[in-house]
Length: 473
Ligand code: SAM
Image (cartoon, rainbow, N blue to C red; front, side, top):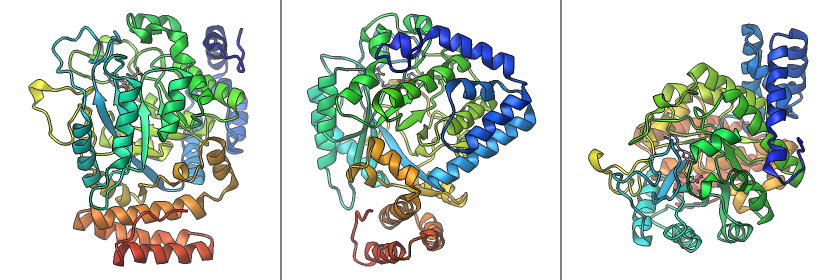
């Protein structure tokens, strides 16, 4: 039985409810009156149900789709302005005992070099990331309870936060590791993680069991209920995602929104972020062997529909996507992107020779962080290295109320400008710095509150002239 409040995965991601949703969407996908009423509801910026959003996703009417894209772009602007948060993944270990059929870290892969970073190696990686200008990381690891222990993660997080190299600092560490216990989530929270990220991969239980034939990840319910345990352990910023390409995208889309609805119903706070990874070529993985790949148009429509269905949720796109796809996705709702990423273990300090690659997947955007930052600014986006909300305790529902209060422009906007200024002073190429300084001069005028604007101008001066860092609202 479908029950949004239930703590059992089979109830809150209920198969029959998804099938009924897809049937309803099919029946109504050309029902112009209903589609108009759903778009009108979405304009109120309070979100949509999985059923309503599924109708929009299924709709083939070009004119209505254009309206959906326009609205997605507007909602993105209203909630996130033109800021784009920057981050980088840091692979700690690719040891893994699972059998995921789409991931090259699967246990049967005997030729991929297996690595786990020591604390000294983490230090080298983090200094390389700081020297690029990164302030926010997403830690990544395979599942290996003997090697990749909770103690290892906790020590690694402590190491990362402790490294202060020149003006560099990692100020927010998010983590994407296997589903674990409430006690372990509590430990991660105490260690100061930002978001706990776990991709569902697929919400289709039967496919899930086939795609994860062996290892602890085979347990669909334990995996799907992980965010409930994370929230019980005190982590109120959680990141959802599915790996598009594994099962039918419309099924995944409905499941993803049902998951968000469940967290909101059961804990009063929806997901902090949603990621939209697509299956990529990697070592012994050929995406062509999976039947459910989606083209760019479908992918972008999914992004737009997620944007209007959950307006308060950040959306993340990685370097799995190339420059032109990322550019289009930014307009439709993406608020966070990675730059200069390496998906190998230890790849920032020392790029690996191709024949000994420990990469998790091929990267399609190989530009440096400086190039990505410049590119964003040339499109009038503000690359933001801000980590203030989490450090000021604005997580979970407190972050959501900031979004809802409309104070973002007096808070996130200045923080973005000040952290961008730090980046320009410490890491940018002369060309990027020139573009960035102009952008900041223009954007500082868009801080609505006069008092706040004065403080921002003074802080920008202190960053430039007195080498001061880490101002935040
Ligand atoms: N091992 C962790 C777990 O159990 O969920 C997650 C960390 S894994 C390093 C990060 C994510 O990469 C996975 O959740 C999966 O969605 C994605 N991934 C795996 N293989 C991929 C591939 N071939 N192409 C694109 N993404 C992939």
